[in-house]
Each structure stands twice: as structure tokens, then as C-alpha cells.
Image (cartoon, rainbow, N blue to C red; front, side):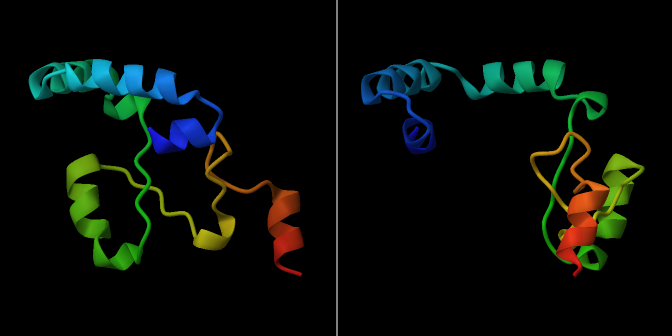
Length: 91
């Protein structure tokens, strides 16, 4: 909730949300996750040395795209820096 308050949520609202979330069981959360967080609707971002976990991740998820840190933009829909930003960063 601290991150929500840092983004402008009032403390009272944050505590109300926390109270509501505490009423959700693990089973309910898993059911919603199974329905909405499918492979075709989510992106999984893992930070680290890809060669340390790439094979295991490919076995679990199939096709995996590795994006070099210098090309990564977590705010972009495709997770990649624009060509202009990438070339400006390499100067």
C-alpha cells in the first residue's frame, strides 16, 4: 500500500483497500489468476543473467524473448526502447 500512497492515494483509502484484500483467500486469488493471467494475456519479466535460467524458463513457457538491459523500457508496450532512444543511449 505504501507505493499506492506514494502515487497519491490517501492513507484512509489505502487501509480500506488493504482490509478488503485481506478478506480474499488464497484459493480465490488463484482462481482469478488462472482465469485472467493466462500466457497469452501476460508478460513475464525476469531480470538477471539469461543463460542462468533460460533453458528452464523455455521448458515452462515455450517461446521466450530475451531483451538486453540496454534495450529494456518497462513503460513501453513491447518492453523495448524506441530506436531513437536506443541510439541516443549508445552515444
